[in-house]
Amino acid sequence: MIDLLGITKTYTTGAQSLQVLKGVDLAVETGELVAIMGSSGSGKSTLLNILGLLDGYDEGMYRLDGKNMAQLTERRAAELRREMLGFVFQSFNLIGFKSAAENVALPLYYQKVPRKERLRRSHELLERVGLLEWADHLPSQMSGGQKQRVAIARALAAQPRVILADEPTGALDSTTSEEVMVLLKELNGDGMTMVVVTHEAEIAAECQRTIRLRDGLVETGAHV
Amino acid sequence: MFDRDAWLEVAHNVLAHPLRTTLTGISVALGIFILVVMQGLGYGLQNGVEGQFADDAVNSIWVEGGRTQLAYRGHQPNRPIKLTNADVAGLTTQADTVPASSRRIRLWGAEIVWENPNGENRGGGFGVRGVDPAHIDLERSVLLSGRYINGRDVTESRKVAVVGPNIVRDLFRDVDPLGAFIRINAVVFQVVGTFEDPGSRWENRVAYIPFSTAQQLYRTDGGVDQVLYSTGDMATDATVAQSDRMRSWLKDVKAVHPDDSRGVEVDNNNEEYAMYASIFDGIRLFIWGIGLMTLLAGAVGVANILAIGVKERTKEIGVRKALGATNGSIVSLVVMESTVLMLVSGSLGLMLAVGLLTTVAPLADHEYFQNPQVDHRIALFALVVLVLVGLASGLGPALRAVAIRPVEALRDE
Picture 1: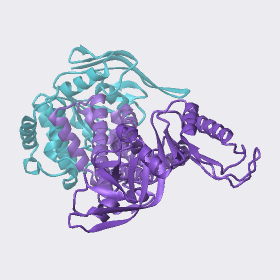
Picture 2: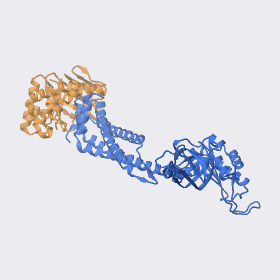
Picture 3: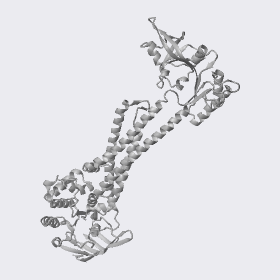
Picture 4: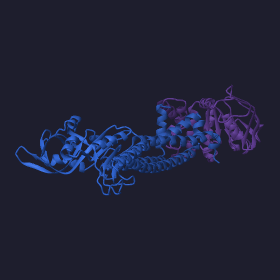
């Protein structure tokens, strides 16, 4: 599903330039649940940006579902994000002034799905994550675990091929962390490919494989 | 851009932030309100000043004889200067063009009497003026009924009169004066018209009769009391040159010392009006200055609030991008929001200002302050400026926000 070959990325700020990724090779198969681990500064978030088509790379090759992701225009990248990728964030990042159902429906808004259809599907997805009765609540009225489940429902809304989760349990206590991981594993069990960025060994342990990043290179776990 | 969903999204976002919306709205509304009200008051002032010139045509030169102060060419001072038909003809040759002119004979206190159908005499002391047909425009009189003095009245020296509202009121009351016969100093005239002069109380107490009739009756020496020349659309400088030329020509003909300021009077209304106009231009500039500063202050405030708003929304923008929004759709969302906000609150300020001016305007009645009014072009201009400022101020931060890489924006630091 995901193939990276010799990916490099350098950030230049003023006179200073910093090579964050120095030639990353890795592969994620369809239906895998993979953890990416690494200390801060290892290049995790840069890698996630590139995987998520939110940032470009300098050299190397990135193939997502067999398609080359080189030289995407901004518009095409947005289109591919809509169709292929679902995001789950550490701090949930629900939009505070929108209800749970509206948050889940937002990706469908960008896919130009009609309003009624959007709300019908968002209710289905909330039911899937067990929060149907919370559909009309604002994020501020929900617990952390509930918010992350809404965020997962939102990531699923556009029926993506891959879910990218950035520290999905980083803001949760261990009980709710476990609940969220159970949900993610269930979705993986349904065939969803998942990449989870984490620094918690217990979370990584629940994944099928761990890719370790160190100083901009993959240390272990690049391939199955 | 114009689909229903996008507008619903805009409406939702605007309404979801009542404090931000209200603050932005107030500063926009206030900016427009102050600008429009200031301009309205400025117009009131302008109308007041222009009202001071409503009596006579501003593009006119008025000539009359005076009394000399200096001895000259063997003449003693304190000599009255009287114009004649020949002087008028000569003066006219000094003009560049004469779009219209009128001679005048002035009688200050004439007795005018009307005998009503019951045989009662009603009368009083009024002014009488012998005039040419163009006098109506030079004096800025408004014909109310009948007709004014015409060319045949003058050539045939008819005994006809056009009477002012005070004469109508005092003599005729409710009776229609048209066709009635009145006696002016015992000479019978027929009333052929009525007029009023909005700029002068005095003129409303006057009866106009043909110039030739007046000259024959009251200036048997062939004298002319006054000549009025229109200067048409001549530039002020040219009219000043013309009035100077007329003055020196007349002084020479009438043997008045060149330095004598009382011997002949050649008054150029253009000059006086130009002076007031320049004073008014200054006032207008001042008002514009204040208005634009106010608008600018409002605009800066709005830009500030919008910039903060977008900054607050960096995360939201990051989420939208991650969910598949293009940069363009985010920028257009933010810009549409700020534009809608500006338009709605700007219109509100505009309505308040128009409301204030239209309710208070009729109450304001002062010599130098009349009819404050809204200039729709200025209101529109202000609204356009605010919308442009809204676009610009929303655009900058929105462009900066979409440039941030979402995963960083969305991370908890």
